[in-house]
Image (cartoon, rainbow, N blue to C red; front, top):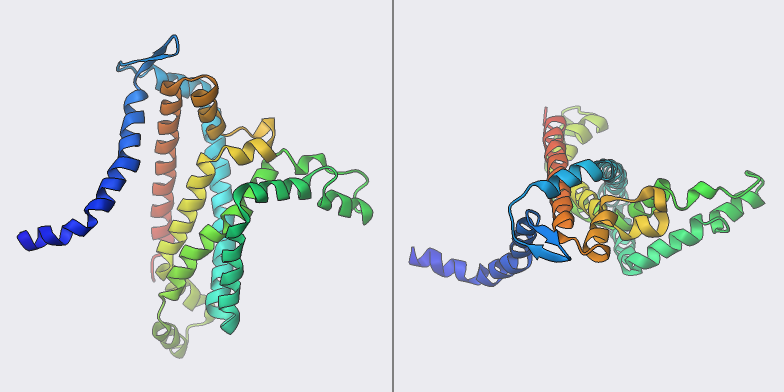
Length: 280
């Protein structure tokens, strides 16, 4: 027992940081979500009224946020998988270069990418100007910017490196021996891909999807800058409750409602992934 205890000492600082920075704030806001707000002051209580208000006033925003997050995570994961697969199996010695380019895009910065897409998608932006000059459209397309489509494009571009890296890590762990053995036994490329490659990179696919989904579900900057008033997501309402209305109980309740919703979506995705990618 003493030996086991000594082995655990090195992880103690990480454990304390985890408790202090993650578990502590989560526990605090969970408690606050059951409190009341009177005259801009928190009143300790135990009421479910805040969750009832969230259900009545913000259900549409929560559903919209989960759906658009699901779409963005799915697109990002699929594109990320294609890039990672290209780098791992098809690009040969240029695979490292592809990975380097993916990593370089991380240096662009979050706001820089958002404003870059505003420049591209705007009424007088590069895309509209090009389409008008080519005679493909008569007038600029107003819906390119300040729409859900702009949010999807911007966030897919931002999240792509975070999807490529875990999938590429999983693909790198696949041994060449079973791939060669399957080919020698007569399996075609599609069968090898379905029965060996996909099941073995399942953790990477789930990690890519989860990161993309959770970042999107918690984002409030992108919807505000490129989404317009019709693309307000749950993060915008949470920000409004905490900053503009100083209503921490409602903001905490909405945050936990989204946390539960995201957990259920990820659980469903994990079970679906396990069933679909089951080796045959």
